[in-house]
Length: 103
Image (cartoon, rainbow, N blue to C red; front, side, top):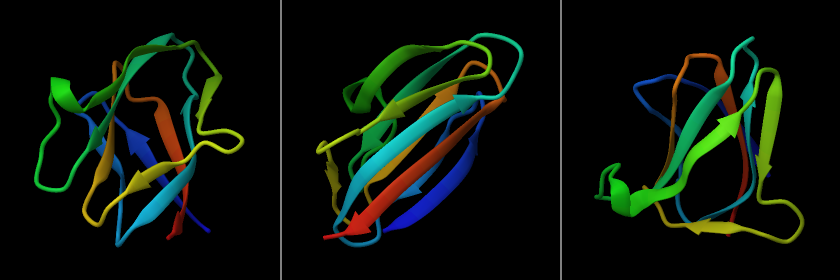
């Protein structure tokens, strides 16, 4: 398994790009700031772009110093080569951690 980390901004940032076929086993968003924020998560197929039809989670509330975890237990997100996960936040104090494995 491997780990990818990224800072997330208001512009939206790719936090993971699949290289080959991968399974995302864990994703967390951490608001390390003093204020409450919201975040949008997009799962974007290779060749597509961030849009309403790639929006997976909309306006997720991240309170100050809070962490939200996705893909716990046996859940997996299967991605093909070039697929991406993009996160956009309402502030610049969010980090993303992605754990993935090749399949």
